[in-house]
Length: 287
Image (tube, rainbow, N blue to C red):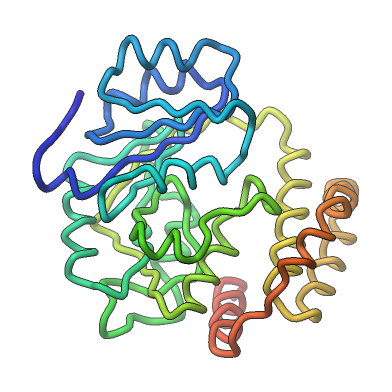
């Protein structure tokens, strides 16, 4: 299904994938055009299948697994002012991207619009969307909803200029939790990030094949994000938290070590007002 209407063409959908052909068969028909699919070295015939059956999708072959930064390729190639991300198992509700574009047009400081993400056939509200909805940062006068300092990539529409200005996703984090560092860097540059409940995305994730590995990855990336941008006190607290988590935490700490030199080389502490906002969020969500 393609949609080349003038309103929708303000937004390019960028999908990064690797060996998820079955999921793409379900999700790609839901995407309005234009669509850019960045393939992270799939070996399941993804690229050939998509080119044959979805000719409106522009396929980019990265040749290897770039992780989340594969999306950067799609954003750079996009010719629209806004980019909506989608996972290979997610898609945007009918009319959502038109509404997102209208909202971004009306709020020029808005860099990231965080959507309401509904999970599975039962359409459960994603816990991250629930957190964004009750953000303790309030609503700025020039933003369309609660201010946030994070987002779900599969439920985000970004201003292309701002995304590229902030460097996009990075290969220190690589994948999983990659949104936090980018969100803080955008805020540090004066951009706004806001949750907009009326813009809806659908996500149908498969159950994690290795929950312990996923926990370890979350620990690794939380620590690396802290090293990249947070005060050393926060780095220490996240390290202690990892130690208390038992084997998954220990595994996460070990896997962070080979990436520490790159994280340290790119370390730049946040402006005080952004760090304060980040701490306010952490306190608010823990209550």
